[in-house]
Image 1 (cartoon, one colour):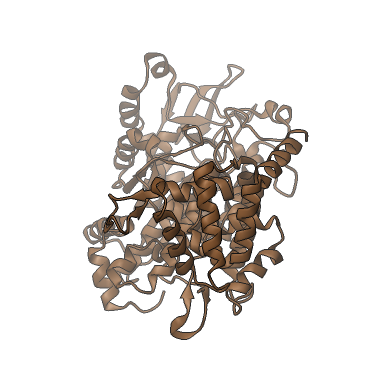
Image 2 (tube, helix red, strand yellow):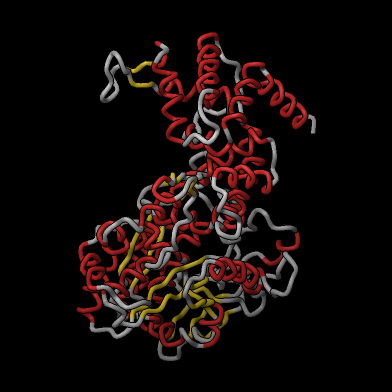
Length: 569
């Protein structure tokens, strides 16, 4: 981490950004405890393939960790442990595996004892899913340590804590039993033995718990009375006691989890405290929803995977999605991607003009660990006359549509005509955005477009717009084009808005119906990029040709033919 600017540290003490709010609580906790190292933890259940929610937990925790480092000026070492509960039994076969029948004989075995159905070098289902998680976390450059529950249980890392749990068995049961129904109370035990005959995780009552010997006695699946040590990976804890035991054993200071854990958090805390350690600080975030408003789930496979997001947008846009409003439920589906991609660019472009107070409230500061990259300027003209243009995801998708090309070189031809000094080499983020826009347009936008013909008023308006564009120089700026389009609309009663700010009878405002007509007739959508910016890049002659195609009905007929061909397969 770079040297700390005093103004940065001062602003951090007062920042309202949620990572700093959590970090300040953690500073107070550490000052009270006197600990010399802070442990952040995230949990992962590898019962299904990792999804974006898993990534989000690590990303958000890393943001709090970085805020803590700034507040303490790196005086207190920190660690981030990503813990996988891979000793949990596979209670059901998740959707999306290649061969469900292959896994059925291994139900209820620890995930790291279930064979790997995906092929490759990983020995078990749990190992495969753990490797996927690590691969994605490494892609994002997280500073973390990976921990496997199987390794920790079997290696003895948890032995002392498990002996302590046996000593506190009655107190743990007193916490757990009131949370269960009568039938479950009769069979419940915080200890889950691993059957020495079948290898399965058993949910059975204990016949005896001998804390002095460190053993449990139970009836195995064949009815045989069996005694096992609680150490060495012969047993694991139920998931609620396991939370508290892990916090106690490792000395966890901070862990965040989803709202579905919120009602159980007091149970985790009590068990940690019974074992002899203070519970960590928590942060509860809202759950992600799929396109129909249902909670995303690893086992269901609904929502988005990390690979899917990265097919259509950058890593930074995903990090922004995770940073923004973590305590609000958010839909996590394909239609959120373009907005996240454009918002990231907007925040990045504004960062360098901000003071420390506003920088610490800017998501890019947290996304990039305090060191955001320089924005890529796209400007036409030179010197004081240069005009910067925000090349957005939406603008590029419309450029793909009207250019009728999915070739990056074709799109770069338009971009370089507008700003000759830029190239894929000088603007790699823009080059990546062009590729993302092409892919997203092909998969989601083009099939959903809905071009319509202009009505009589709109036809007259578009003819007037065409004439006004024809009177402009071909290198007219985005602002000039935007103003020209506004002037055309001001002369048409349908689009006049006298209630607009600063509107007068001689110079009325322009209603959104004008832009909606442009987007629906020319682009086949209800909304789109700033018209002036689009025309400045696409070109005035090309835009006039697009208007002519729309008025001739060609855009409607061409898209209808595309839809018909697509339906025919």
